[in-house]
Length: 367
Ligand SMILES: *Cc1c(COP(=O)(O)O)cnc(C)c1O
Image 1 (cartoon, helix red, strand yellow):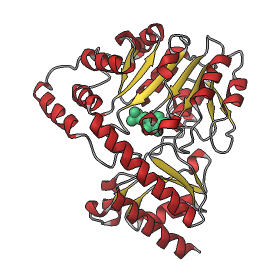
Image 2 (cartoon, protein in one colour; image 1 turned 90 degrees about the vertical axis):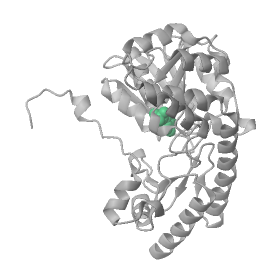
Image 3 (cartoon, protein in one colour; image 1 turned 180 degrees about the horizontal axis):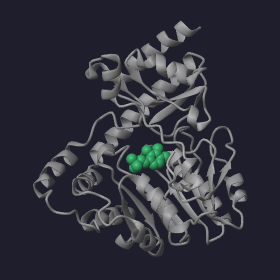
Image 4 (cartoon, protein in one colour; image 1 turned 90 degrees about the horizontal axis):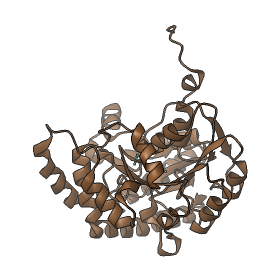
């Protein structure tokens, strides 16, 4: 080991476990990449919108130039869509970037950060990276216990993370409960509401968090183009918040944290309501199909409000590994404290068929 004095909180970070890339599995098992079904990273099975592809190709001619550091066109479009001012929009290299910017701007070493057990791993990683005191609140029925999270906010707490829906559980808490937490948490504590899967909510689940921004200047809403908009590889997310918090987030970001191709493609995708509607419909129908299939097999699952389902299979790591031999990639989630479960993204109908057939084979061999 070197003599570089790496802070203890950095040494303790367990690296993020990403979904296995298709090419990696193809190399390791000598498989044809086209035969592999990847349902491990909650990507959009429809691919990227054609409108975004055209916009991206149109922007290729100017790659020698730096991107617009202020993302004028995209911020304007986002502001228009969500009824906020452009000064309330922060762009990020994926919404992952925004989660980190929020921690970097508002949390110093030793400050408390509250999040739920089984919550999205980046909350822990981003908190650890700045030496924050992590306050992990036990889950209730595998979902967020918002009352307990509000109660866990103490003197030294500076930030609360809420994922709604949450990843990897797919669990959802009603908007009214999130609002109730905002009412309880002191105004000088930042609340980050991560809505990465908001576009997949059913009509009865939808709620308008942007309407709360005026009353709650401590609220930061994070959204992404990676899931329903089909642009995960481009890395584009955005945050909506008060102009004051937005200003601070922008002070700590890289000047060019979002690239010009991503800005152009996201602008087109945002306007593509037909693509969004197709993504929603496909996901809803196929998610119901997966949940029904799990129920038919007597497998416990968490009813999902997102584009994936978490299902209990006994030994999640072993089942995931066996599925790889069937050329199906799902996500083991032992690292989230859920070793008996796997998370499977909702795919195209034929992909889900392949997954269910492979699952049946694997589970039969194990029983
Ligand atoms: C996928 C995901 C994100 C962000 O992804 P980006 O690609 O960085 O925008 C954020 N939060 C949750 C809960 C997610 O599942």
